[in-house]
Image 1: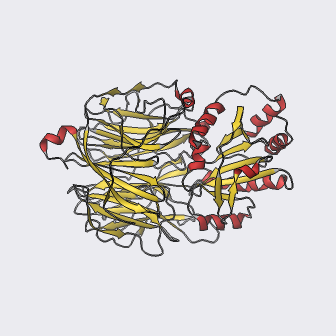
Image 2 (image 1 turned 45 degrees about the horizontal axis):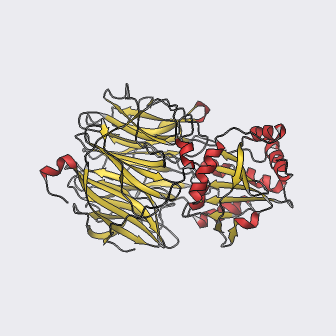
Image 3 (image 1 turned 90 degrees about the vertical axis):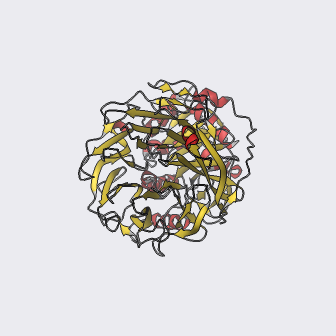
Length: 179
Length: 435
């Protein structure tokens, strides 16, 4: 059923935005994030982190959530990690959560990578690829933005400058409930 | 993991598919034609065999026939800390012959499971396997070297692997393909980013002139290849070597190209674009092309693209003039209720074309096949290969005798499986008995 939802989300993402403020539209465009015209509830999931902790998506409700899908064999994915780290730091203490999800099975290598880069966000293991499929991930990196109501509002395929002023402003706007 | 367990034929596809998906899939702006469909069955298939099953993590399978008709299956398997590369021989009847053989030595383990090992068969019982193994460097993470191991006894034992990449850099060398010719040369192509400071990769090439004992200097075929799409090598009947890969064009357009070498890999032509798909994708599709020839010299190339309208499709084009021109691409996946993915193709010397891929709907992923017995003009209907709700990463090999081998991965909680199914091309059935 997750995949069904993801296909629905993907199809919806093809439609042009029809609502929201002009300023927010501009921020999506400036950040290189595709605004999803009619946000839908995101598929629920419960995945284990590389540290063995289970994260249930239902506990993220009320937060703006950025989920980054990546793999160790994907060069562009690794290159954008430091920018994601800085984005997370920009919102320390706020209701912003940043998660990454990987179908990779190199757990020890990922741990080393996380330590080396000082990444302080969870890396969730999706070894069955179910959650990636549920979010319609067809290439890496793919990043989705979820608003405080648990709705998928933005999607970016490919690496982005996540710590750019535009990306930070976009997250701030979503966090402040501009939409 | 246990071997030789036979699958019971039991399809349980009964789930409904979201109609909403249709909305996303209907319509196309690309220049392509639908495949004409044949009515008759094209492959007579034997029972499926579950050759590997257990809770270990498994990579996609690799398959190749050797000249005698023995099938070789290879895969990565991880049950403890480090994956291992394994191979097994399979008889014409689909039965395992001998023991499963571990290929990689301790300390040179495969670094990942996301793709099948590289596998090629050569003359005189030679078998070649490739994999990436982690390079220990405290200053570089996920660095991996590309390794080549050869067997001279039909896959029973393997020599110590040799290093393929010659750059000495602590970077990722992977996404390889290899093929062996009848003179004992082994050709390898892969991706690495030795000349890049950021994203992107180069398509590299190397040759072994001594049957896999050593590898010559590396050559760059293309400095701007798509960084995660596996290239593929094949040999034409005239002996020319062809490489196919997904190139990164200006504006992050990721279309398929070919290059030909007429001098056994010393030089390659400039890339030849197969079709102007115009797929802009600034990321890692992880979907390489599949290329093969028949004995008349027809080139078949199949690939995944989303074109300019973000609609996943599988295309097949052919060339009868050495890549100067290509036929209008045919769309192989015609279902409006599913998405296609992970295409693989094998071509019989007489021109039978066997295509396998994943078909994804809202409730399941399964492996399917279509076959052409007339050099790609018409194709039979889609035939479902896998059981259960999660069949993926199919692959196919065809022997000149007409024997076809199909393999794919399945997951049925709590087990992962590798399934193999043998068959015979329908028009060759009269020449031999059913497997």
